[in-house]
Every structure is written in C-alpha cells, then in structure tokens.
Image (tube, rainbow, N blue to C red; front, side, top):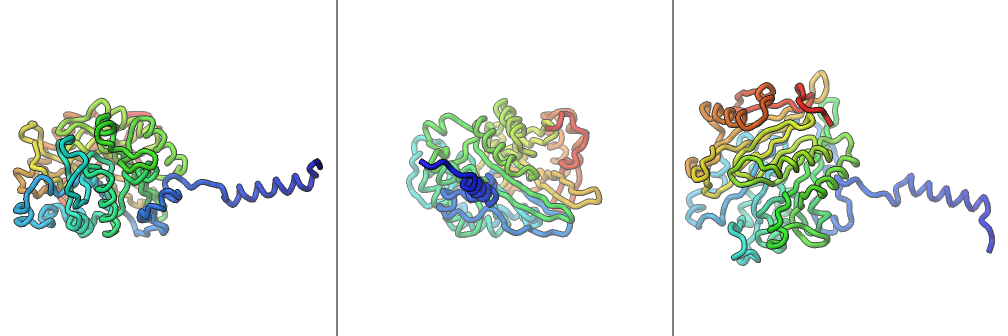
Length: 412
C-alpha cells in the first residue's frame, strides 16, 4: 500500500478547510428554522428576511389569554354579539402597535369529538373561520400555541389550527407537528435610527405531569404537541438560542401558574432559570389575573398578564380576586444615547360578568387599585422604579428595560 505523499495530504487539508469555510456541513442558528424536518411541514416562514425600517421606534404588544369562548356559550350568544364586539374597547391599542403577540388559548377546529372528552374538565374550541379572521382584522399576526388548551382536540385539532392560521397569514409558535417545530421561536430584526434591534420570542408551557401522562399534550420526537418547559428543556432551548444570537433581545413567553392566584414557587424557579439560561425579559400568562412583577439579575419578570379577550364567564367574584389583567407594550426607540427599551403596561378590567364581555382600560379609581395590588405583592424596589401615566389608550405603568434603572440584583 502506497504511503500518502505530502501533496496528497495538503490537498486533503485544503478540501476540509474549504468545506468548513463555506459551511457545507454547518448547522443553522436555532432561531432560524431551516431544519429539514421543519420546512417539510409547510409552516409559514417565521423569519423576516428583510429588516423592517422605522424612523425612530417600534412597538411590540404582548397580550395574555385569548379565546372567543365558543365552548362556553350557545349560538344565541354570538348572534347577539359579533366577534368584533369583544375587541371593541381594546382595538385602539392593537391598531397602534407594529406587532401584536397573543396567547391563543384554544384550538381552531370544527371537529365534533375530542380524545379528551370525559377526561379534561374544560375543552376549548374556536370557530374555524371567525377566530383567525377576527384576529387578523385586529392586527394580531403572531400567536403562541404553548398553553393548556391547544391540544384539546388532539393532533387533528392542532393540524386544523395550523391550517387556519396559515390561511390567514398568522404566524404561530410554541407548538408543532414534532418537537423541533414546537420549540422554534419567532425572530424579527429591525433598524431603529442607527441601531439594529434583534427580537426573539420563545414560548413554552410549564411541565404538568397529568398533561403528559393523561392528555399526551407535549411534543415528543415526531409526535405533535406543545413545547414543554421543564427546567432542563428551558436550559437547553434558551442557551442554544442565546449562543446563536448573542446580540438579540430574548423574550420568554411562558404559560404557567394557578388560575386566579398569585405566583407559585415553581413559577419563580422556572422564571429564574429562564433568565439564567439567556432570556432578557419574561412575560407570562395563564392565571387569568396579573401576578407579581420582579427584577432578577437586572431583568424584569412579569409573572402573568392575565386575560386579554377570554370569553369564559370567569370566577373573579367566587375566587375573591381583583378582576384586572395587563397588556404589555415593549417600546424600542432611538435616542441620542442609543437604543432605549421601555415596558409600558396597560391594566384592563377583565370581569366578563360585569363588562358584558368587553374588556376595557381601567378607570382612574381602578388604576390606583391596580398599583396597590402590584406594590403589595411585588418587591419594595418596584415602587421606586415604576411610573404611572395616561395616553390616548388609557392609564399605564412604565418600567425602564434598557438602559436599566438602578438594579437591585447583579446583572447576568
């Protein structure tokens, strides 16, 4: 057998260097869904290939639990109220935003039988035409499916949901037809003044054992489901996103917590894990009320937004809790000192029994009540770092995100 010559060794090294340089074997960043098993599923592209150019600012709106509640009401309910009716008093803040991200807490399906009939107490479904049509009409172009109702009609219901959203060009994340697809975040890139702002939003549903063992809710391998956020999965997903996008601003958008209650110890642990793994901001949902606000290692955690338009009758009076939720607007603006990020929180009144299923901005008396609850439940430093104001939408509370006000914790 001939020994390799110096020339042949050099050629081999050159070929390997060429492959490495031009990326023939390189993998794509986690935030850019170019995986073969992902694109083969005909998911609409989640990444904008072009920068969105704006003069001075962009506003990204995060809203909480969203469902028109078809499963809670008979036909007469919707004959007397058109779908636009439910959004009427919140429409201005939706229209004024550049991007709106909602937690869509229902499958969009016309299936008549659920595999969870007799097993799960509340089984949601949304009208296959009116739900996506109304969302799109009101500027809701992005929805998270990582919650405890997306899989109420199984894989068939999820497929119909995906098809309905695709048809109306509403981009979805937080669930999928396999585990890779379910874990994909959304990624947007903007030019604001002289600054480039990269935004990534990642969604997951906290691990609940009965949702795994009884309901088969979580995506696994090539099985459809929602993105599960157990501690190690959070670490793996967020670290991978952060490694591939070192300059991005990452928002974690978890579905978690106990209904009509303030935060649990599990939420606190998972929120801190999200920040430790790479998230810059945590905005949660799922409890149907707003929860505490906290700063951890220099990063804000909004434990729960509560409801947006969520047409169940509600149990605020029965549970003896204040019927308030939050809408969170992340404002990114160009200032003389560079890019500035501000969180603007609009409290809304969420008791459908009293509002006739029209959630609305809070009154002056109610904003004082909201502040009292937030300051009572949240750490003392919040009172010094939160400001109150009013604009054409209504009363709001603001927090500096970047540059941050004096931190009570060490930064990451």
